[in-house]
Length: 166
Image (tube, rainbow, N blue to C red; front, side, top):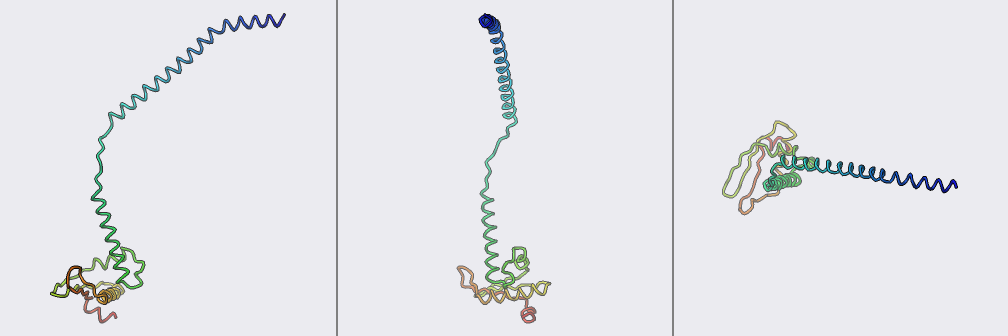
């Protein structure tokens, strides 16, 4: 009998608790719904703020940058070609900075009917002057010609250096 009574009491308790549990679930669902609505409102506010602070984006025209990059690469390649072809072996791994004094050396260009001469001024450094004379001799030995012209090209080292340093 006890088991039957227990079942009966349990059924009565469950019947009383069922509407209460329904209310608990409704409150939980309501709280969840409120939380979702609040999060959605905050997200919409953030999107409105972002739209208000949005700046106009312009397309970047980088064609000039690309042309400058091509020119820089071409200049570096030309400098390395000149280094490999005309400079002494000690310059085999020289960087642009080491070659720069040679390219910035003051000079005078004399145009003749058949010959273009470049007269170079000396350095204040004895070793650089030796290298300069060597470069001049290598350039003159290769007998470079200007494109689309019948000119010969001759590089003349400073007169007092050509005899004293070689």
